[in-house]
Amino acid sequence: MRADHLEKINSWFLEEIAAVKAEGASVEDFEDPAVADLTLRKIFEEHFDEIRTDADLADETFVVVSDQASPLDLRRVALQAREQGNLGIGHYLELIAAYRERQPL
Image (cartoon, rainbow, N blue to C red; front, side, top):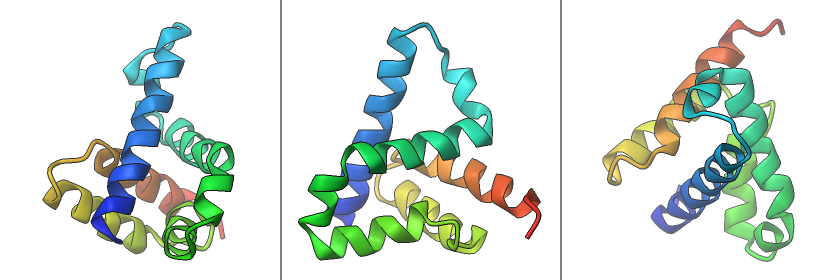
């Protein structure tokens, strides 16, 4: 994933966490992988117009949010996030990968 795209996704995710915290939720709520997965999907819905104007960003975001994304795909992006400066989304992508591994096929 391009570094600038990963930074953008990370920024959106952290903005969503901040917004939910402002409504009374805690960071611990996002430790629930189902919540993290839903949050990730929500930010892509909210930013769909911006995403679709950039074909590369659209392709890369689909890899992360799609049900077809394998846990390995998510872990690769999580690793990149950590290597790129410990972007917070890396942790949540790991949670989502583990959550999706436990889901029935």
